[in-house]
Image (cartoon, rainbow, N blue to C red):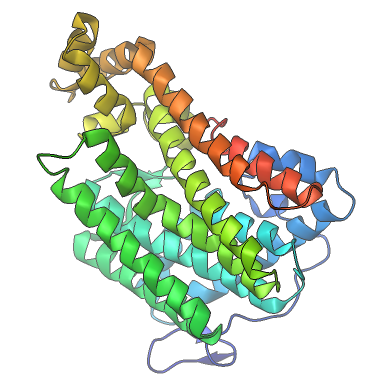
Amino acid sequence: MTTSADSGWTHAGHGRPESDEPEPTTMGIATGLQLPKGFASIAADADLGPAISMSLAKVEKQLHIAIANSDPLADATTRHLMEAGGKRIRPLLTLLAAQLGDASRPEVIQAAVVVELTHLATLYHDDVMDSAPYRRGAPTAHEVWGNTVAILTGDLIFARASILVSELGAQALGIQARTFERLCLGQLHETVGPRPDQDPVEHYLSVIADKTGSLVAASGQLGAIFAGVQEPIQRVLVEYGEKAGVAFQLADDVIDVTGLKQVSGKSPGTDLREGVSTLPVLLLRKAAATDPSAAEVLALVEGDLTSDDALARAVAALQAHAVTAESWAIARQWAEAAVDALAPIPDGVVKSALVGFARAIVDRSA
């Protein structure tokens, strides 16, 4: 092991995470990853199940190596969210897409590490923007170290991702740069809100396509590229990933108001309390113009939610209103659109797993 004098990053070689194999008994589930239930069918396949599980273990190990830092403060802050866990949705898709080609190439693992590092970096920034007190059941970095340290930690993790993706070549670097641009534009558009002539729901869908769909799309694309998958199928995976990413975020919106996030340590209705206008609230506002029951619920949602009792009443009222079921339906429509995008891919266990992936990221509880 050597230590970079410039960055304080403990690494092997020129920034590439160590490539030594994990122990044979180290499986993805054993690392604490929360696998989407749609992947249960993969475990039953004698070849694909062990391949995905072992690759997840490699990714997890390399993630911890990639964020290690010789500076004690930087090491603590960059590990903060990593050690809080996570679903690892994006690297999962990278690994699964690679199964359409030669998934044994080491670049596939490195690409999976890149997309998860990029995602982690955005979380540090998002939590500052949203003044979120908790993430993955733990206090957010800005609550522990302050806004400036949290923002700089996000920047540092972005830098680590950039080092790794630069080693993968110009094409990967271009994908990462364009994705980063969309992530920033999505955050900008979310911050300023819709234009006066723009439908709020359409604006919101465009925001989450940029903030979530773009990185999920890049995850599948990079997995396919480095597994040697033909370009037409790469394009299929881009479309699939974008739509699956939107479905994932829409489902997350509904989960927040259905009380199912208790298992993650985040109180139901956190988005409501923070004033985040997610899909159920946007649909409620639209319905309130003509529906008195929607107007009553909206008054609760937009009222003072400081107390837990007031928040619980607002959550219960919104959960019971038809806009919540409508939001679920829209999320599932996006998931099915992702499934439809897979039509050019030949039938088989990998395609079935991709179908399960798209549906599982909607039909989940956290």
